[in-house]
Length: 164
Image 1 (cartoon, helix red, strand yellow):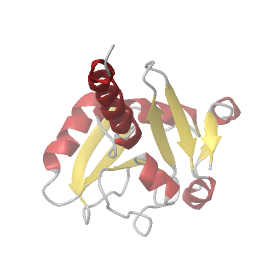
Image 2 (cartoon, rainbow, N blue to C red):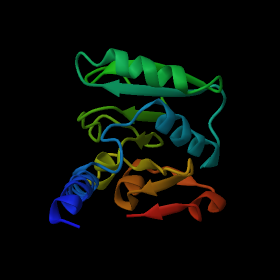
Image 3 (cartoon, rainbow, N blue to C red):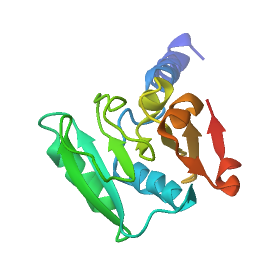
């Protein structure tokens, strides 16, 4: 057999490997399904917030459609409102950050700040959810950011999270 017989499959394999190595493994922004899983953590907050749980979805200017999509995915136990970065988040038990908004100066004690992995790793958000290809989800908590919010979780939930 000639070398040309093997060249095409080898090129295809090299292209596939390059794509797998360079492609992101998770979404860069929080989406509706991730937010729906993340707000389930509110059931483990001590003391438990009254239902429907008030949630503020903070979006960057011009991103209201993304906030509305998340709002639609949250379910009946959540009373969500979409606000732009400078909007009012008073009274919310949780704040979902979509985009690059930094809410650390605006959040009050007792408000759980939820965002994507980058937000959590940077310390701007206390909680993030990583969805697995299998459909499972992993909760990640930034311990320093969580301490600043003064949000306490039930001990059963604490066993389910990965602390950073």
